[in-house]
Image 1 (tube, rainbow, N blue to C red):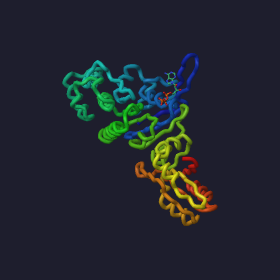
Image 2 (tube, helix red, strand yellow):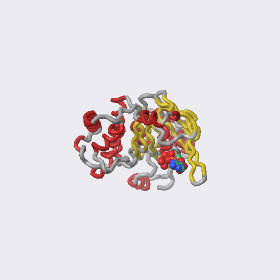
Image 3 (cartoon, rainbow, N blue to C red):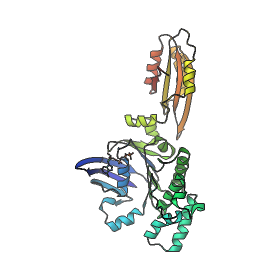
Image 4 (tube, helix red, strand yellow):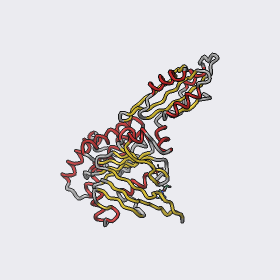
Length: 343
Ligand SMILES: Nc1ncnc2c1ncn2[C@@H]1O[C@H](COP(=O)(O)OP(=O)(O)OP(=O)(O)O)[C@@H](O)[C@H]1O
């Protein structure tokens, strides 16, 4: 559906060259919800804006549905852009137009007659759940409602691809979830391919089937979300996954740890992060059997991404001269292990 080959984008700013994209190669298949993640400045927005030629690549090729985007005339590009909708972090609505007027805008530009436009706008507002806001202005809407208008507008010309540039970054978690559910529904119902640029792993976790990780203008890792999740190869992907577990201990847990009765045995508080097929329970059982230590589970949190478990366990290990061996064993099993010294 989208084939990107050797894509490079260099910005020229105040006499210096900034290589925002450095030889990017990417294949996005029809029906994918494809996540592009990476830290600030990695080149995510530049990449998504190159896909619909809002940014002109310095070199390389972008093919959508068999059409080479970089070679189109202005008229051909205008026609092709109807196939590629885009939504933005700050919605980019026209403040002087009502909800209806915003959604109608691309249809007016396409030169459709008033009756067709009215019918299509009605259909779109029903789809995004905004029929009761038809005549409201953007300033009268919540962030989530504004993004729903953005989505209706982006879908107006029946695109094959929907690009989402940090589309939920300005929204609270609950509203984010409702927008992500709407995107999922659109993907399922109309088979629209969706490309999602985000710096939040949580967004990717909710909706994407595939993901590419970007760093310094390059794609450093890509594949099925489940594969990357089960076996992240780069440091940056590992860090993104870590953002799904918690880094700061809850106060109640700190109190609990401070008040533990220790006795005379050697002890350590250990945080274990696990992703993928390695699940916690059999591991703890085998540690107890193998090392003859006591394990006191202080905290546990397990969630799933598309059926794959991940989570955090905080345990107290007790047992003289055994603990270092346990830590090594857990690491060998591929678990991320951290000794918590100070709480
Ligand atoms: N119009 C521009 N002119 C000059 N440099 C730019 C321009 N747009 C982006 N850049 C630079 O290109 C690099 C990539 O920027 P880009 O916005 O694509 O990254 P990003 O991953 O989307 O970051 P963020 O998550 O902060 O939006 C950065 O170094 C940025 O400063």
